[in-house]
Amino acid sequence: MLQILGKVTSINVRKVLWTCAELQLPFEQEDWGDGFRSTETAEFQALNPNSMVPVIKDDGFVLWESNTIIRYLASRYGGAQLYPAEPQARARVDQWIDWQSAELNRAWSYAFLALVRKSPAHQDAEAIEASSQNWTRHIGIVNRQLEATGAFIAGRDFSLADIPIGLSLNRWFSTPLDHPDFPAVTDYFERLSERPGFLTYCKNGTP
Image 1: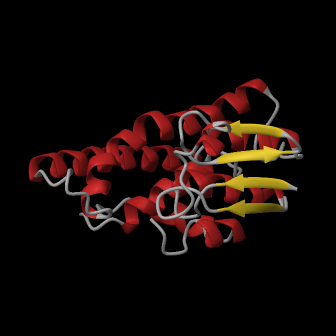
Image 2: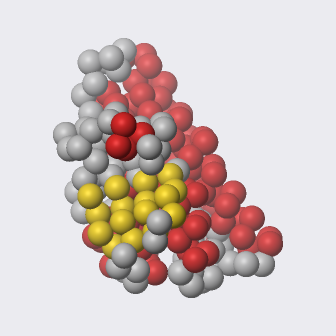
């Protein structure tokens, strides 16, 4: 059976868990990370030298990096409806997965660590405000894309890209900052609520 190593409060672990739910793929999950088993041990670093979660073990195959993992699972376990084979359709899905990781994550980092994690190292008021504004600007990009598709982030159908984007929006809504009215984002978030995996691993009170 597929093994998933990483604590369920991690947004990157929840990408993998939600993907498994969409694929109806059974798994065993072990809590690793802060507050649980240390990822700094030789045992874990033999699996991932970066000491980061998630890591999966799939019949002896070990893989890390959450976005790589969800692509792998969709490709291996019949997830063509999530990750299409047609090159342009797949590229559109990849575009939004990579944008979430490279751009949206950077935008929220300081504000989230300050306002939700209460990190003592992230309490500069000007930096919090700048991060909050940048985060909101990126949510505006999501809103415009959803206005264009009228449905999901990469097009008319739910895809693998909606998993990291949906988790990111959950984090934005859960953070105590000003939330401008983005109607397409609000409608999209409610549309995602029709999916059991979203309810279990995203809209569950965990930012």
